Length: 372
Image (cartoon, rainbow, N blue to C red; front, side, top):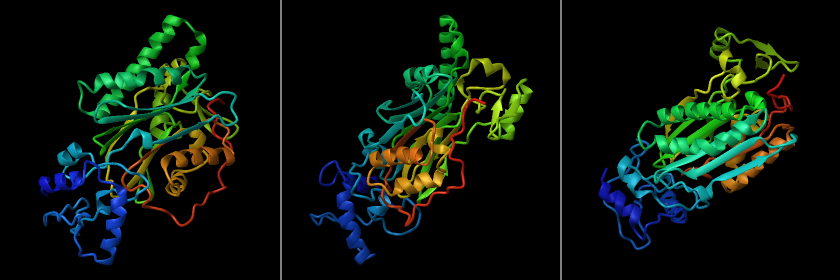
């Protein structure tokens, strides 16, 4: 593939390659599939072709992953040259987010998004329990720990693992110096995502908040809940001297108290197998097929499954509308817990729409409680 052609396509007519141009050229290509992409000024690119999906077909703007004119973003030229394919910029001002209190007295969910470095975006959700202290602590310090670690470590999975453990230790010291007995049972889930160069997505998680990716309109789970229902998690709890009981709703709890087996905080259960070490996942994005990724807390997860969330979001005009609609629907469907979601759009936003959005009413309308 010619880098010169990539530079010419990304910079022709200015620094922005907009989706409105995409739509116009897309129609022309549908009329004549063999017709090459050209600019309004009739300046033709060379015969070199981009082939991001290894299909062997001539590239259209659609295959660049800049499909829809509702999300108007430029190409990231340095990243595109580095990875050898056009990569759309992901801007924080296009990200959607929403948080609702549900039927709880207070909202113990926290969420965060920021430009961590010049090429890394940071997204996080924290779902506190036993008070908001642990979630507040993560909201305040997690980003800074990650920012310090990325200066000395290139492996983002390792960066996130170290950051989670460091924040947990720092929260323990904070609790020790404040001598607050109530903080012993304060804990939080943590699901954090880093997006580097608009193409490398790395997720780390403890607890039951989730991350998912929409690829070709299908939900791809990026996290697995840490609950006593998992054999590996239950075995660790028992080997550490803890035990698992089930409440009246049939939900398992560690030592009759906590519905998850990993968290930040919950120091009274640290000697019984509850750990702060996250499970991590790295995935390379394909903006041709990937519409968005979303972070959600359990107020949403226990009411709507991943594919239902995916289908609803894919019907929305923009990520801000999508986040608000999901949070509201979770409440309408009976969520009692706090409901928080972050929706981050990618190149295929608006491309994959299902004809129908269905909801299964067979599940319980009661969100899983953390306390027995």
